[in-house]
Length: 206
Image (cartoon, rainbow, N blue to C red; front, side):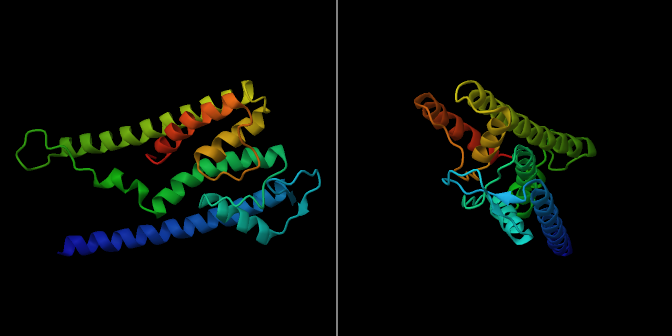
């Protein structure tokens, strides 16, 4: 009984810490985005002139990004902000996953009782931890490979720049989808059907 209570308190503490870390992450990310892109664009609006951004706009944009809402009313204009945003989103997936307990499976997968005696030895516990780590690393590597495939496709087939290809791949597979970039060719649409299906499924394993 005490053990369950201790576990509950530990989870609450961890959740509180993660929540504080995520808000710090949001505020820092918003400040960097504002510095890199003092003006923002809107998806579907064809103009080289952006709208002057405020820190509130940047915080708002950061929140709708890491929650994968992605309205599209604020999108980055500068290559530097697109690159920053791509890496920021990838790291956000891990942080938001912690808050939503998406990665709880790492801690709750049953350890392997190799000899079947109902008692876990130190060696069996170590093997269980190694297996959970292997699963996480494999999920991350698989996802990054799929992102790379998308980058190469959008670069070579869709004719986007390297920065826009990275940006589109990450924004798509993270399910943010602002709407400012998307496949525009028939080949691209065929590719997207299979690539998105596989990539998003793999993303949810992280």
